[in-house]
Length: 156
Ligand code: CA2
Image (cartoon, rainbow, N blue to C red; front, side, top):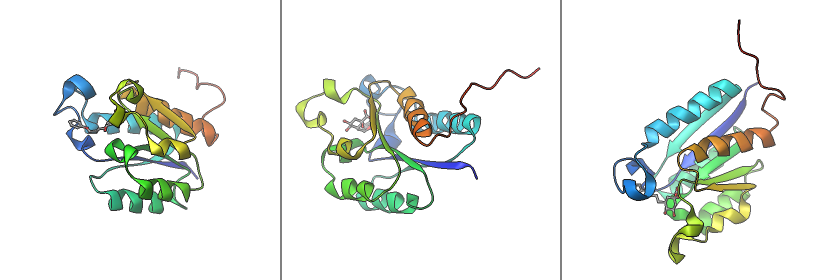
C-alpha cells in the first residue's frame, strides 16, 4: 500500500500570494499544493493537503491522520507560537512530524521567533520559501523509508 502523508496549513496561509508578498512571496497556496502533489506522485506517496484558520479543525485533522497517515508535514503559521492544544494533538501522533515555515522565523521579530510546535517536530525547515514544503515532504518520506534508494533512471 502507498505511503500516505498529510500536509497541514494553519491560519491565514490561504492568503499566500495575495497579501504581504514582501514577506511571504507571490506563490499561492494552490501552487504550493500543486508542487506537493507533483512530488508525491513522483515518489508514489498518497497525499492529503489541508488549510484551516481554526485551531480545532487543525486538531481534528491531526487526529484523523492517526491511523491513516505515516507522517505529518505542518506549517502551523500563527499557531506555532500559541497553541499548546495543537502541540498536544501532534504529540499523540505516532509518526514523524515535520514543521515547515516559508520564512526564516529565526530572523523575525521576537513574537515570531520561538515555535512551541518545534519541540515535537522530528525536523524543522524554515526560510527556503515555498520549496520548503518539498524539502519537508522529502525529509518525511526519507524517515518513512518511502524514497527509492537510487533515483529512477530516465525512460528510453
Ligand atoms: O513563514 C511561515 O510559513 C510562517 O509560518 C507564516 C505565518 C507566520 O506567523 C510565521 O511566523 C511564519 C503567517 C502566515 C500568514 O500568512 C499570510 C500570508 C499572506 C498575508 C498575510 C498572512
